[in-house]
Amino acid sequence: MRTLREHGALSRAQLAVRSGLSKATVSSLVTDLELRGLVHSAGVSAGGQGRPGQLVDLRPTSVCGIGLDVHVGHVGAAVTDLSGELLFRRRVLCDVPGIGPERAIDQLAELANTALAEVEGLVGPPVGLTVSVPGLVDRDAGTVTFAPRLRWRDVAVADGLAARTRLPLDHIAVDNDANLGAEAELATMSGNVTDLAYLTGDFGIGCGVIAGGRLIRGSIGFAGEIGHMAMDPLGPYCSCGRRGCWETQVGLGALLHACADPDDPVRDPTLDLDKRMGIVRARAEQRDRRTLDALHQIGTALGLGVAVLVNLLNPAVVVLGGYFAALPEWLVEPIRNEVVANVLAPGAGGARVVGSTLGFTAATTGGALAALHRVLDDPTVVPTSQPDDEEAPA
Ligand SMILES: [Zn+2]
Image (cartoon, rainbow, N blue to C red; front, top):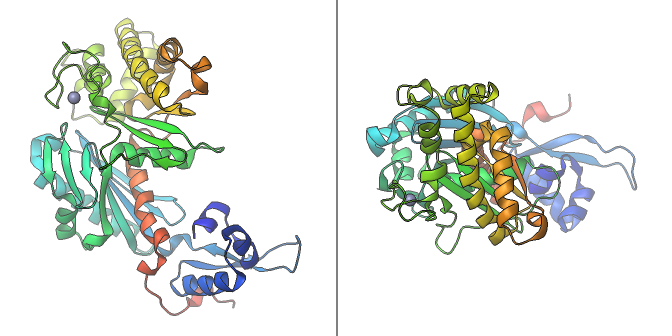
């Protein structure tokens, strides 16, 4: 299934070559996947060497994956089909730290139930749901260990969602937002990118690291908490209780504080973040002095931290996610200047700094894609049924 996902429709012979399996094994696997409705015949291969073969392809609408995400100011959902095509996306404003974890899980469950109702009839059943959380996550237990910006400690998110939706507990996973975002960004990259660092630009800052094509999770899954790198021991207090963490300098709170007074609409939490970023962009385009100074200040502080990442990891790409993605024209240059000045490797080791194309949606998309891993890892989670009549030739 992964081979088909990567290459598109292939004959059984081509599948055997690409997978390294025997033709007999491929034939029996294809028959099994057909019975589960996960692949179907897709015409006859044209020309090439050997006999023309019947092509096999994924059936994108056979199953779907759901991604949910929790931010300080909103909750979101996305649904994709088996090919990764987006079928549903929604974001609901919500004061997550204010309402507490139980009510936030109510909101997430309501969004998941709405998403399932909206895609019913368009796509098959969900094979999984992954919740993205800005904080430390115990993936085995399906709990959030600590998410300082949400003020969550030891919250049983998977259990809570299983109790509030029709999804069984083994379909529900919880993961870190930066890790999910990094995987979603990697999926959008052209060329063979194997080393990437993805920064979540939100009130908190996290980093998803892909090195040698693999996500780096650390020994117990807590890698990537670069937002709490101490940049200024006498700096302002952070949500984690320490002082001068990087996210106090470059988080969304720092930008909003630097570019606007408290009564300014860009600091209004009841306005959607995309709208607020749109206002900041418009002001920067009109060369508003305060906005440009704020962006330069954030970009320089960002660059100092990105240089640490580049010295440590030598990534091919550093992707600026979240709010950074709305403002790359003003952030990339000061970042580049600091990276060039502070990285030992000539030419910053070839690291490119780019704005994300997914913005605030990377983690939900990544969650939906991660949910599909459940069926890609083990297609037998989808039960067999009789061959689908509509797939048979007339
Ligand atoms: Zn901190």
